[in-house]
Length: 291
Image 1 (spheres, rainbow, N blue to C red):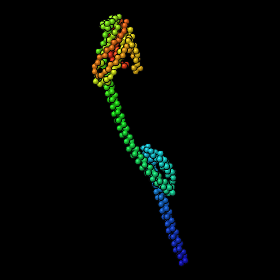
Image 2 (image 1 turned 120 degrees about the vertical axis):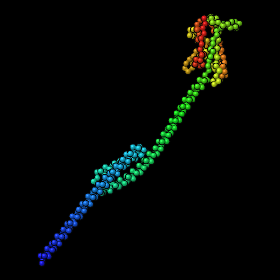
Image 3 (image 1 turned 180 degrees about the vertical axis):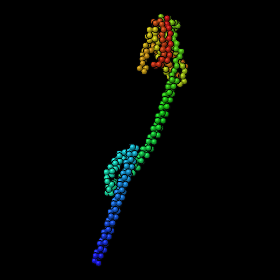
Image 4 (image 1 turned 30 degrees about the vertical axis):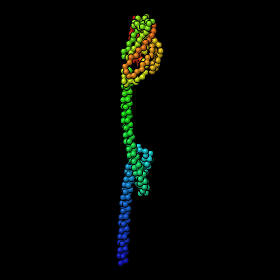
């Protein structure tokens, strides 16, 4: 009887131990499964965090390329992201590290969003300023082109007016005389007898010319290429002019004749040149011959 009771107690102990072993194995399996699940979850969170950080870095890269006034701030914040990426990649992904990294990420995300928003605003303002600048530049270019056109037109008009105001000298004639003691003039072309040369020309009428005293310099050159008469010298624009006499006419926009005499003696035989100058500009010329 006692032996039977001992057998029963042993069976009970065996059953209890078996149940305890089964429970222990079950708990160990559960813990192992939960650990693996947790590890997979942590690794997944690490990958996601890295992806988010790299997306932020790309966002900074793009913003920096836009070269707004925030370039320095953007580069500084990007450096923080790059540093955090390096730390996350080196970590083993444990819960404590991930919690710390996530906290840093959230802070950097807030700074990123605020800075990118400000950068976008600056970019938009720069775009408006660029458009305004281009419009102003276009307007200035058009204005300069218009002014250049006006200047050219005014220059052309001034040249035309100046040209139109130029007086024309016509009918340049020369007569040579012998003056008798009685004062009577005898026309002659014999060099030894000539003592007076009359030079005459006509100033054509011009309504757009400026009225007033008009001065002309007359140059008479003998056959030996010498200027005869007063032989005075005048300078115009750096050029000198030796002339025989100067004559002044009171011009009133109407056609008028001008005549002046050049006195002398012992004239050379040959061809004489007569030139009429308006200041330094030759406006008429002719010749005559003494024999």
